[in-house]
Image (cartoon, rainbow, N blue to C red; front, side):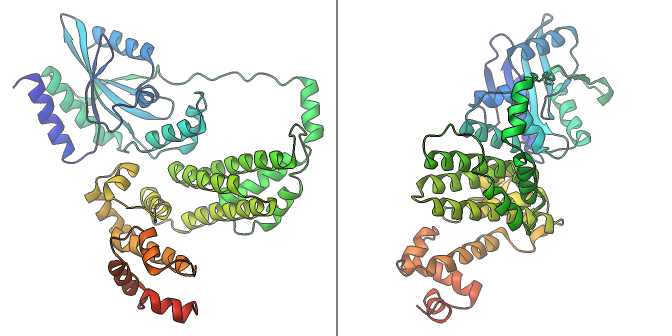
Length: 413
């Protein structure tokens, strides 16, 4: 068989059991010539995952001296394997499988890695989503695919002990600039007690602690203390809200909420708070958001028997109740095929993923039905059901009542 035929055959075999990406880079231009990754067109992803041009150059230099597979890691524990296609001692192509995680993803490490790059909030969220979506596969299960790729490219059988390991893409520790003594004194004086109050408050989210009202009230009472650089109370309230949302999102992620979910929830409340016309509305929304994050973490910690991937699925479904939910999209978020996702979800949750989606939509429907301005057709449309009759049938299967009967008996409308 020709080389491309061998590669195609290898990819077909690998796809039978693993959702690993394959990349082929031109060693002269570093252009992607072939890829099975969903992020092939995302240049930022290529840079975050595999490093910059200098790192590609170092991999090529290695390949010209040693034609054995190279195992690389970066600053967020992403791992990939490179097999070198050479001609007359020169590397022509780099064949890569990965990236993937060989152990559970550390969200804190992902955030630290992104802190090394200057990104807008939206761009950072996209990068975090892409990195968090990469598959997890133990090293012992990954190595056989590396051996097969080496054989497909070079016709050479190698043992795992022949692999070489590269850590040149690990981030270097940055030295922190010292804070001027006079500035440190100002910070200590102006913000006395604020740091401790914030630490106590956001630890409530991180721990999923339902007894947070005292810490929240204490933090709000100190929110007016600090910088006077804002022109109006409204400007200061908006700036405080943005900081409050950011710290809440970070605490939720530390507590175990998937980054893609935490940032989506934060975006939702940021939009709602920006649109609020009064200070009391803004405060109510901030209180609601804080409770939302606490409850999400609390539920996560209460269900230790459910894997992080399935918890991410549940959160994703909760955020998209008004949308058309597709298994393929959920699978991409957690790195599973839709078939494996369906099987794993039912094993862990005791119900099919579609039953779970309908249950969550029916709970949302109950809230919508409490609005007298919405017809049953409106509720059906908002929840993206194909027809009112199908929505009503699903509602009755879950509650034992038709939506109209529920309104009359439970809501007295």
